[in-house]
Image (cartoon, rainbow, N blue to C red; front, side, top):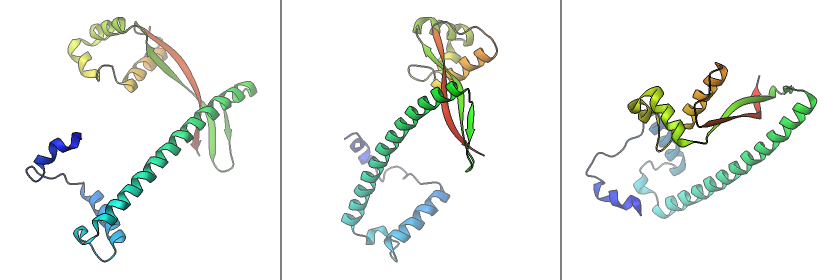
Length: 174
C-alpha cells in the first residue's frame, strides 16, 4: 500500500486541517450523525467503518450512473445536432426555461509532435514553453484556447496541428 510509507510521519509533522467554514459543516454533520455524542472516540468504530464502506459503495454507484448519463447525453447530443441541422434550427426553448442550442468549438489534435514542439520553442522560448506544458504535453484547455484564438483571428495554425469543429447540443437555462 502506497499510503503506508507515510504512516511513520503521523503525529511527527502537523496534521492537516480543513478550512474552518468546511470543518464547521463537517462538525455539524457529525453531530447529526452521532446524536448527542460529539466525540468520535465515543462512537463505535465498526459502525463508523461500516457507514464509510456503505458511502463508498454509494459513491461508486453514483459515479457509474454519472458515466452512463454522460454517455447517453453525448448520444442524444449527436442526434440533436443531426435533427437541428436537418430542420435548420440553432436552438429550442422550453416553457420551463430550458434552452437546447447548438454550440461549436474547436477540437485540436497534435499530429506531428516534433513540428508542434519546435513551434512552441520558437514562439515562446524553451523556458516559457516548458513552463506552459504539463507532463508531457501542453494543458488541453490552454492548447484549445490557443488554437481557437488563432482560428478567430484568421492566423495560420501552428505546425503539426489539425483542428476539427465539434458541434454539440448544450442545455442552458433562462
